[in-house]
View 1 (cartoon, rainbow, N blue to C red):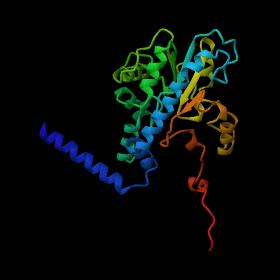
View 2: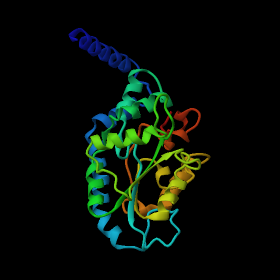
View 3: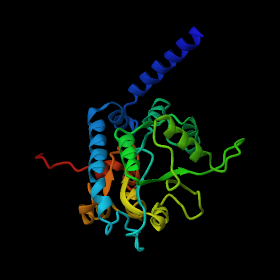
View 4: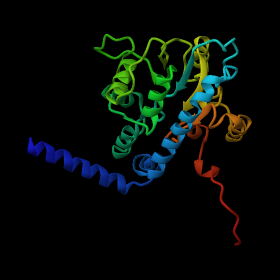
Length: 277
């Protein structure tokens, strides 16, 4: 047993040394920032504390909604907050770190294996916010791009939902109530990675008080493909009054639609300054 533990410790040291020898991995600095910086922890607390402070006003004003998809007569609907899961409620930086240490990239097989472990930690502030919302009678709807798919030798039609709920339970998040929900990608045929249809689904039965996420796609439709960074920036400006009032965004420098729209050589997107020859 002792020799086994020593081998594991040695392997970890070797992997860490190899990663340090290759500091050019796309996610190295961003993952380190999430895992080690006091600044990340501070901004996560700030985001969730601001959302907590806005809950009462959102509950009292029945004429407003946070979802652009909500066009029904929603004033009498029960209230809900809608949250993304990954890098909003659950911190998956341990998975990202393992990719760096193994000199590999994200793939659906290792990602699903990580989900099955149910070992993600909580994003700072998320637990307190969700508890506060539940105490005020607000339903919690999770809209996640964790993909609902079968696994070999697993009888569950959607084991990813079961594993995610188990992960939340381990961290002390409130048990889902009858009006809470978790909507996974591909749980229905029309529920693609584009979250618009699932926000519309939640809006059929609830007045959406707030949206919380780490990606622009958690708030607005059609911002992940065939758009430019300038178009995305204009949308952020257009909805400027929503940020910090109805919409609350968490920092995620590790991955996201912000990165995927930067095609080709990414260095060409850098904005330097002119200097004399």
